[in-house]
Length: 319
Image (cartoon, rainbow, N blue to C red; front, side):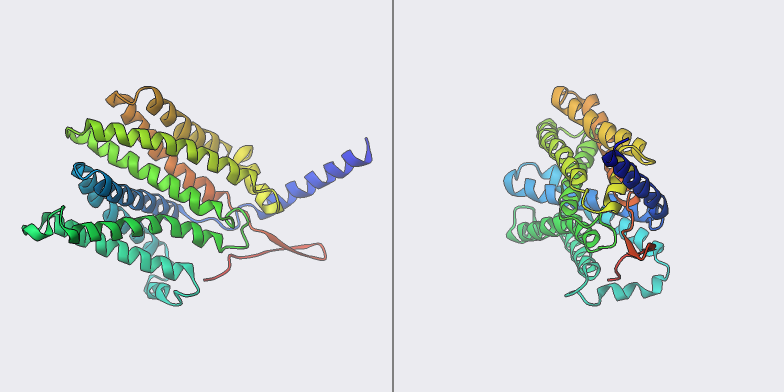
């Protein structure tokens, strides 16, 4: 055995032992994962609906469905976060220090998004001509709702990025991954409802499927670069190993890659003109969206503070 191979073996053994020490210390529960998924679908659907209203005014069914999906899904997700708090009565503190903490900015973003989506939906059903979908007021509300829908999807990635004690989250790629995944799942949810409702929206469904086809490909590339870049810190490498060949490998390869990316891509690429394959693609893509949040949250491994051979796990930096 050469000296180099011995050094490599000792290093791998140390990393393996460190991974066992660090694993399982800080993991959010299912309520937080469900919130990330619901907020991603709701915010993504709102962004898609606002975009379609601007570039395709005739596709009002997509805009209306985005209003029905957007705010209610985000509200349900916020309720899950509220009940996940150890002290729900202290929830009002989330609004403090918006100039310093992303959790405060996120609370403001969520509040504005829900309020404007509710006003826009009211304008849609209100029996006054000046509040119809082709009015300037509705267009303004639509733009604001779409912008804050994007921010709703993005801000959780920035919030995770501030958690310096978990290198797996501390990367600018994570907000982009959440954004692409959120818009994709929003499109899939809208397409699924259009298919199940039986509305005459074949052109809209076809266009949504074509857009999602590129988003799925882009999401796969982002995930590749996200994992490939996690090699600078031991804890980050431990997270990647958990996903690629560790305890989360089934969820990653089966849930994220196969069900969430490969199957929807193939179905939308070759059978986008058939209802059943598109329906299966929507279901698989939404399941994959859940698994994306699951592996990102559960795969987190804390970075240790090493002092004279003693490992001291760091807790996430409080906001």
